[in-house]
Image (cartoon, rainbow, N blue to C red; front, side):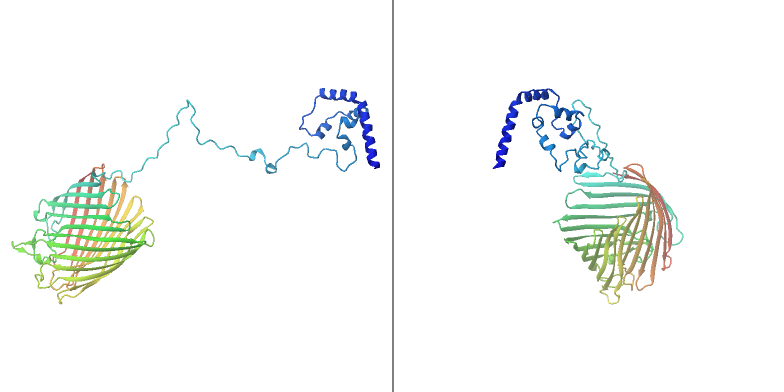
Length: 514
């Protein structure tokens, strides 16, 4: 009760004092309003630090009560644990926690603008420089387009010299010759399916030995029909035209000229992919015809007993281990039927055979590509006097590119063949060819090659070894014209008497291609 009374009395006294001093207060406030004031955001303790030294004395003698002049003075002047001094770091700039310790040098400069909108009236930017397209072979023929098929025809006319045109043993006379050669390449340009092939035909005319003049040629045409994404139908055709040399063991008498031989056939098959497994089934028919030979006496030597037809069936299964490696296993069965049941020596030559082989297609770093296979073949003849012909067979085709300018090609074959020599079941024929081509310039290529072949006649002890070595040069003038030159040395060593021969052939010609 006493506290309330004391409070009321004090309040009344203060009000009476305030009313008596109101004119003076009004005058003091007017003076403070005219004086310049500090910024509202400036801390109070900073303003006190800038006050004049005699401010305390003026405040003590001022007729305005301190409570009115400075309402906070009642609190500031009271003894308290709170200090009335400015904080020790009050004059320092306030830094955000994330910016403390970071200087201006640590800020990255703004990235330059990649592209800006063109300003009105500004010059257009220069066009970007396009990278020139590097052509693989600037001297390759462009071809002639026939619908969606590209044809690449070419002709080559050459002249040269052959030291042994007839490839006979003993003394012989060389002769100059002219060679006329024509080629046609076929390549389709379809979204699906594919047609490709190459045909070549040539004729060699000898000036001093007309009987040695002869034709030769070969060709292949393949058609692939894409039935579905995983199924393809394969159609193939092939032919080869060649001649027999007068000293061949199958010609059992001296002949004039070079009799012609024809090899042609076709095949049809289907290939189906099951994930990485590829299955191929193919049937084939091949035909061999031999022209009758003309003897020195003027009589005719019939070779009709050598004409035959070969029917074959092949099943092949391959599995793709990697994109460049596909091993396979292959099985073949075939039957060879001769037009004449009995040949001129009284033997029945028709036969049945089977072949089992394994191999693989491969690609190693795109530097070595090819296909290699090896197998075993067994052939049984209708004539019981002829023993079964058995042996290893195989094929190899390897392409090695050690440098962009050098190409090495290796081809090899091993096969069992037929013969009409009395008492012999057939032949073993092995042949290997190695070629090394190097481009001295983009339009100048030098090629060295060597060939070795061996033919052995089963049951007769007869063997022939053939060797050839030579070099070729091709200088491309333009896409259309090229100059070709070559030299070849041939040698045949035979166990048959008077069958060895040696020949050197050199020629140069002009090639025209489109």
